[in-house]
Length: 125
Image (cartoon, rainbow, N blue to C red; front, side):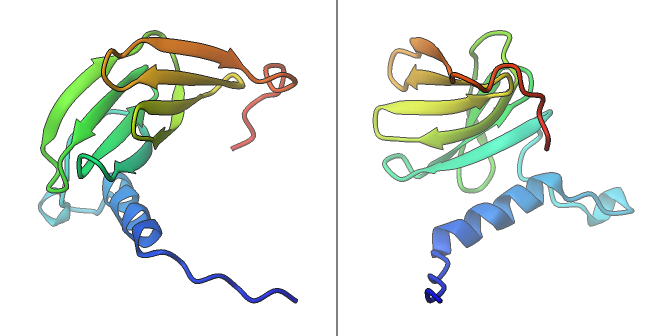
């Protein structure tokens, strides 16, 4: 049996931050909103800028500060974005219908890549 790898602190931070986006208490005054982002569906930390990228189901992504201030919003098109990974020069978005959207962080030019064999499958999650 392989030993269990320790969880990295950034993984815990991302889990807690995503939980903060999704949390809904019984009273409005009990809620702490980091940012108001409709249909948030993915989050990634960008180490080079110390910001977070949040994808949503409406084809947009937001760059937010660690304190939750929205720095910028960009509409990529009519995509149902389900996740995001921030790399030095690119953002990689998982698109619901079995594809990836690769976006240049500087120019926002994008490339749509279908993943063979996944486009006919329905989202199970």
